[in-house]
Image (tube, rainbow, N blue to C red):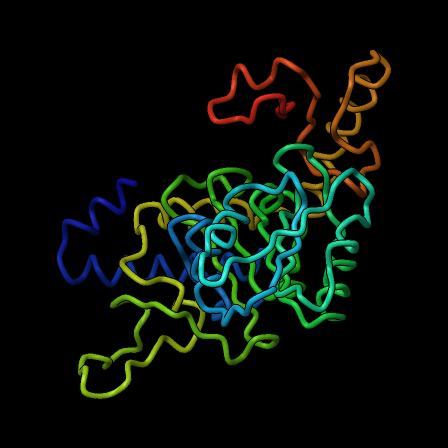
Length: 303
């Protein structure tokens, strides 16, 4: 943060340093997610990124989106609030691992999912969802927020992916990662733009505006440079570790806690199979909503 303040105070040379931090963070995220730096852009939060994708789609009457009934609002609300046309939300119920398949058909335009559920700690099978999406020609949109930083991630399984940076990636609020799979969706273009997402030289309105050629077309205005300085530093720290080792450490603790809670007859929402959970251990409690602002009445909340 102090380096950002110093650069912000030093005029054009500081501005060049800010842009170098952006490029450094893109490279760090690309290494973490197994993709190219050009596939990585930045938005202010996951909901903004999902909104940009939702705005870009030529929706038709009868289109639907497949989601889990307990999906995180930032993944769903930008699509659910569309009005012309309205989009059907087909919601998978229960806890069967393959439950989303019943919600996917020819009307499905997007399968939207968190890799790790915020409510239950369940880890979804992205390979199976990729196959479902390909079968009907739908997009696979993934939120990696509760996984990125301790689980190995190959973001290329998704068409679009996002992640907040203030959890396992050790960053702060103000910036989120936006991934565009340019190989799967080479012709994708957002429906809105700002000065930063335009290609250099797009200063004349007498001809069509040109967008940035890579995923920085997600970044419509100034990136949150201070947050990106923190993220870049955090990514440098994380790069010292093999994510497989981090996963092993984290899930050894998680599995031990799940086993002890089960022995104590405490009701759990998190699957016990390590292949089906992340780092969160979620306990069902009828009183949980009393301690959570905005939690729906009757919902058990994760602890």
